[in-house]
Length: 568
Image 1 (tube, rainbow, N blue to C red):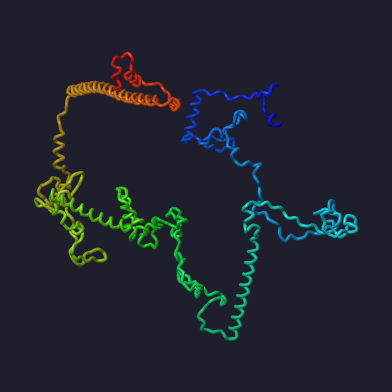
Image 2: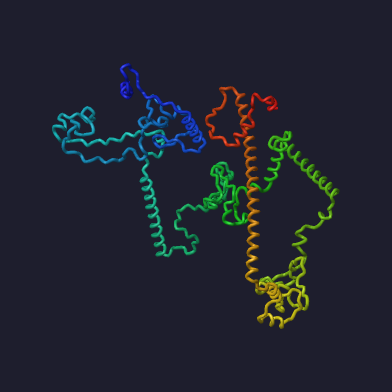
């Protein structure tokens, strides 16, 4: 109580504590605070940070995070009081701490030490705790026969797990000693065997026809006692027990060690995707292609179709279930398939009777018409045809290789300087008569093509005088000015019309928004006053000209004689 009274400031003579009460927030500050809280809850604004730099959950109530103003108004919101306190937290011994074992006795002191036992001279206890026979003259006075000091063990304060840890205090060096011991025994065995083999070779008693090359005859012959893969023989029950998994099989998670390959679920031991999908290997060539490869084979697909039919039938009112009544579901599914096929046949026959075209359905498949034939063709290693006819090249709908007017090449077989012609005579005129080698000689000489010469003759004109050139220039400028005036008038008219259309659209949208606002106000007014929503979080901005015009058009005047008919 005294500490509390000392921390309280401004205590008057009358006993009234002069704490500064929090100032009342304005409406604008309150609205901003609420908006910030909403943004923090939505995740759009960063969370508030306490004095330790940790984020405060925005969904925690204010009475938990905020410090009361009458305790300390200067403190920020914090959650430190919700976490474990350091002064109340219990500390336990660490993992490496343990009792010392096999501690050697230190050298016995030859002189009496201050604070030691007056009877035996050990410094670890006092005279009243001494367990030796009381001496007639103690070691304090004689200085002889001083007893060695006892070893005091550390006091361990272990937690729940430490008290139940079976390996607590285990020294790994013990295991190294065992390994070294077995290694020495193995080395001694090998040495004895080598010495024995040397003696047999020296005496000539070694059997040269021994087939086995085992290094150690005393080793266990694992190959003689091994079981078949996936089986185990129980000698007590005299039966063969089948294991859950063949131990020689490669584990699923070892098929592909790439971390981006198929996901392996260790709980269910399932790998649904193909582990070799990223390697480009064919799923039919690998030994394991994922659990989905086996799930979509056999009767699994039929089972899934039956289950889907059961769900659809149950939604339509049929009480069937795959596990509860499988026989009824199977018979119902078969009858449904028959009725469905009959309905499809009737629908198909009706369409054919109405529109016809049955002869197109009876045609052989497209694969037989275009791809497969009975012609036998034998090819060599290089692709040449040895026996049979070579496959005909598919032609277009246009006539090909048609030679006209004594030409030996088609039109378009020759091209030069952007012109097409005949390769046989280098003629650039289509459907002309072939001139042969003489035409090639003429084309190689400096001669302008016929079509190009015509273009040059047409382009040649008489030169104009300076007066004619000036008149042409003036006429062009007048035409250009007239066009610019017309374009300006057209642009001004179009811009005015576009502005009017935009204003009409904005006014239309403002009228719709005003109708929605009036309806919302009517709904709010129908709600009880205490249950109405908090309306101060709405955004406040100046109304536009269209919104003011819409308000004036929709405003209801009490003196209007037609006001009672506006709501109808």
